[in-house]
Amino acid sequence: AITMRELGIAQPMLIGREDVLHRLSAEMDLQLEGIEIMDPTRIDARMDSLTDAYYFDRKRHGVLREDAANTLRHDINVLGAMLVRQGFADGMLSGRTAHYPNVLRPVLKVLGHDQQGQHYHVYGLYIMIMEHGAYLLADCTVNVDMSAEELARLAVLAHETALSLGIEPRIGMLSFSNFGSAEHAETRKVAEAVRLLHERHADIVVDGEMQADTAVNADILRQYPFSHLKEPANVLIFPTMQAGNIAYKLLKELGGGQAIGPILLGLPQQVHVLQTGASVDDIVNMAAIASARAQ
Image (cartoon, rainbow, N blue to C red):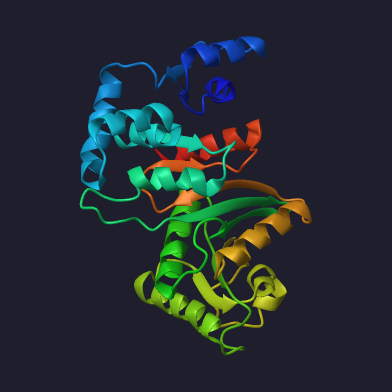
């Protein structure tokens, strides 16, 4: 939070007991001046309004108002999500000391649906900084399997994310087949996603199904002159979370890449779940991305 403030990335807000945060900062010789603290144990007008809003949203799910108040006092992820939903914050980062699903679930309970109760479909994207450039990889964290429709939607969200970060996206829809070279239900699913994208989003540069080396190697790509990709892809959409998760970790551990993320796609708000054990640099990078995309 101090680094964010000093770099002018965002106006940070810390959620936690104020006395504890000041004691910890003093022990580490850190100054919290200028950083807002949201103390869930403090009862004030803002906390009352958040409690009312959460109760209104959950009252037909077996939640009493006192239950709502207790949840906001004891679950910082629900509290943070409510701060975003009610406009008291523009974004939220959480999860450094927790398992990813244990943070994502309460966030989606609050932010995962619109006012009519329709649920958003969310995905997880990583930016990999490699020696020769940056690549966007998805879905690496949320959906174990995806339909053709969901893959197409993911590609659109990744396209929008790349543009918001100043990257001109070229999307490769990955599989173990190159343009029909291997007939299988899994390859047909990816090919169908590409057909949907070409039909609905002619402005997006995307093609597939293609193997990973075809997507990123210009020499191999030239063997397919009909491809909509005339240059190697910089956005890689994986057919399953398992493939995406394995790929980004191998690039990080064996390829020397720097992983920034995961960036949560599909919500109207900038809410992101950090990697367990995220470093200061990881958190600041995610704050910068959230701030840029919230503009």
